Amino acid sequence: KASSETREVRDGVERSERADFRRYDSPAQSIADYVRFLRGNPRYAQALAHGGDAAQFAQGLQKAGYATDPRYASKLLGVIERVRSLRAA
Image (tube, rainbow, N blue to C red; front, side, top):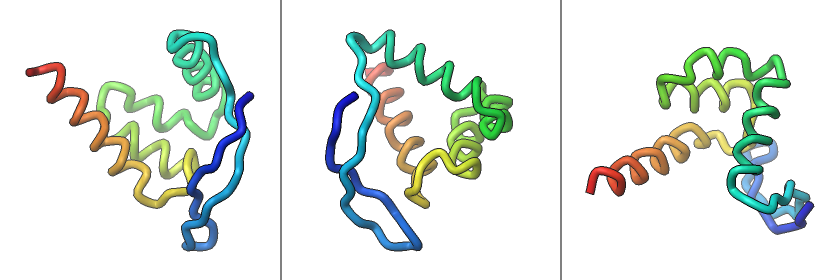
């Protein structure tokens, strides 16, 4: 694991917290663990049911409580769009 400062939203207030995160030796390990994590938690089943639709997937993760940021889905979609535009260039 690795410990780092992070921004979390608690009771509607954004604050800095120190948190532990999983650490990996490769991006492939990270992705495989992320998939196992989502598949192993029934609360993410609705999000996974929309795996082909990025917007519904992101909104499903947010609705299931994946992140504390109430703008998580829109931020994730912004990253997805940036990656798509880079790939198209």
